View 1 (cartoon, helix red, strand yellow):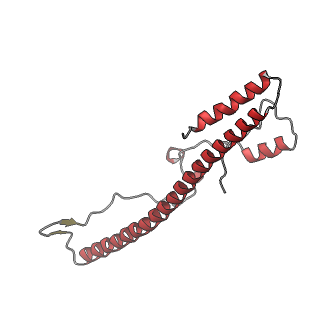
View 2: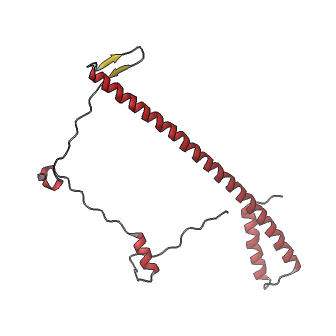
View 3: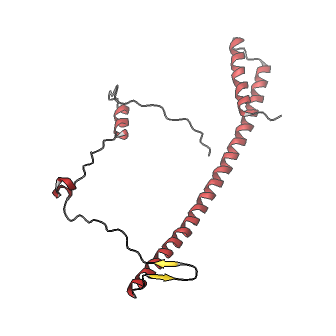
Length: 169
């Protein structure tokens, strides 16, 4: 009967409790039980690792497919933009700003004007300036280097252990 991973883990915890209760006596029965539990754990972990490896490989294939499709999309967007610019230039050149076809109504429109500032912002009159306060961010690398070097930064920063993760080779 196939056992769930948490059930196998619970067996190891129960064995630990049993050994503590028996004063650590290691009998042949306990040794056989440990061997069976190790085998169950190894089989279960192998199954997990195989599934993870398969799903990671599938994800990589999908990522490559996304990139391929994105390249096609980008090529189509660029081609459409070039055709649109060419159509606009020609309609403006012949002074036909509206054309109705059986399927489309095409019109040349002008975007709202934009402002180009010709001087440095600090040379502008105050009513035309927008002041954005500077932002200050923590330099976590410098703080980490200082803490690792033994510099006391109590109340300022502390090193915390990173998350646990499984590495499958």
